[in-house]
Image (cartoon, rainbow over all chains, first blue to last red; front, top):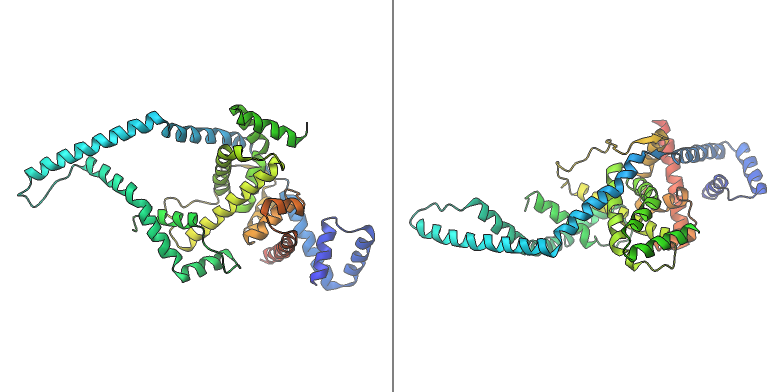
Length: 186
Length: 184
């Protein structure tokens, strides 16, 4: 049946000579099982042809470049030397301010059990800490996921990857860790 | 001037600093990028994300284009790579159930309005989603983009024998899926 299916596919894709077409049609008409297969392929090719006539609205195509340019402009702006310099100065000033405030507050509260930390400054330090350590955390988590055999088997099964040497790309695994970090699971 | 030459001319203009040439290049090919991504991913929102990724890669990497093969071959390669990466990421996320509820999407939502051929398009889209990515890739490039095996081989880096085998399996699988669809 595999050979016949190939013939039928060739028929619908225009790869058979006139003589081959006639021979196949004769065979199809004299064999019920083959006729059923032929009709199924006919329906498939008809659906495929029908789906080629799709037309998407022009509004969407008009929006593609506009959104790309907007997004790209924002990224370019964030990477401009002036913007980066100002950000670094602001961040450094905030850190110095925070350390000074914290020192004076520590002195003030040294005999108290509860030490109040300014929320804004705390946020900055937390962000800086996160920036410095995020890469290390991602590396550690990546190693852990890759070393768990059952994860790899499940992923391969889901993706129907036959190659037993296939490894999950680092970028995919990092994406997972990022999701975990975002959800504050870690 | 042939399409290939026109593309080359626009790329050269862009590389010499003409931003409008990039716009023209994208406009010439955006439908192709979207439709390939859409058929690979099976929904508008993911396809749209891949389209934006492809444009970013084009914008940043056009200076590495060698002018040896057609621009469309290079573009298909980028679109397919981004789409397959997207499929893998999506599959891993779903598998590990870490899909953030806030980010969960309504895949029925379809902001890109299909003006014509909606029923047949959605039926085939539903069937294609059930094919493994390797089979889906060759099926889309051969059937919808009308490429020859030699061209598909250049895009995917796979041998013609492998592609033919994948294509044969994809057509048979789609036929079976369609039979089941009509039975139900």
